[in-house]
Length: 132
Image (cartoon, rainbow, N blue to C red; front, side, top):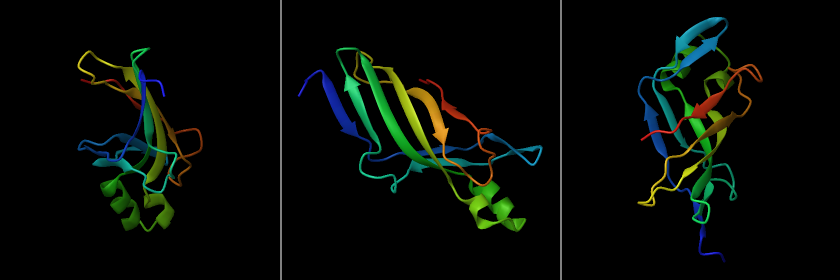
């Protein structure tokens, strides 16, 4: 075991984006309404883990998440679309960032969206930008 490299499990994640994100569907742009992000508990035992590498000063983590759009899903259900269209989007966020002197870190990275009935393959993208 290398004391400069610490592996960890991610056990809880609850995020809400009140303003949501823009969604283009059938040639029109909609606001998703509130967006919630939570760990995908069905992702399996190897999911939701990370590494603090103090020798390089880098943190990295892989989050398996569910992206839910409750208001947009309710609108779709009201239109009578197939149920698969209103289900949460499964995604994998692979992120990294610098370990700061106080041992905190800000992660950023690209998000791989799993196939979903609302999005055409290869046409949807997500990314987490570094923040403070």
